[in-house]
Length: 405
Image (tube, rainbow, N blue to C red; front, top):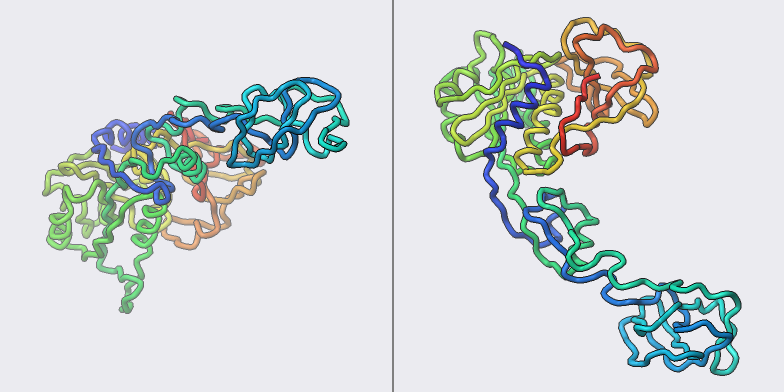
């Protein structure tokens, strides 16, 4: 029996918690896109001391004129404590005396001999960067299970952190079954086609931050598939296959996995395209069997595979989020099933792809995401609000959101 899209997401979420929390320590320069292992706290205040926000003169009181008693550049400091009618010339970033009230910009003073005369009213606390105003000691730098960005790396560096503990990348194996398939560097024979599915899956999994191994293509016979599987169980966290999961007489992938004790979590999804999508486990390896048709495979991977990988990465925000937008033209759905529609979001409208069918390859190349139309809707009217799920950029949330229009 087919499960709904929402139910499939729930089952993946419920079962993927068993993923091991393996970690490794790497240089921060190599941590971009990785998932942080444990919450880190600031041990150094930023700024670490009160400093000047611009080139000017530090003062401690409101007066008509000030004598210049010292000069401090960034990286240096002064032992002087400012008195009334005294000022210290400071450069941007220079450490200020503890009793500094304000810094007067150099363009706002008139210099007469060794004195400065302010040209305008001086506001208290102006042009001072106070210790800890950016981040104070004990504040969180990055939470556990958060994705590391270039901004995170900048903050880590500002704390003098050279290495960071991250979750290890999910180990993913990919293979394709089909006697009609040839790899893109092989010669085609009559009635054969090039395999576009595994290069898509391989590159997409790398893009999502995984360690990926392509096991190759196997013929549509039970023993060939069994031989390949026997060397992968428990070596990989996730095995992704394409083809061989429907009800054709030459579809042996599911049978091969069952001979190794495959535990079915769901084996069909009420979705168009890609109904024969199967998810389960063999020992400690998750198995995701995707349809052989290229567009059906890629769309189902974007819905289920990407979510599963986010869970395996221990990402804090694994669930799909969406952008509410308007559809540019009326769209009529021809079957009473949740239907995935690829298209392009231009910032104002969602435009349905000009042509698409499950077996096409040249569709997502012109799309940046998709919508899913509920089985209960026959059509979407022009300018009706839809929920756009992006492919070309990350847009996730911590809790499940209903993303079917």
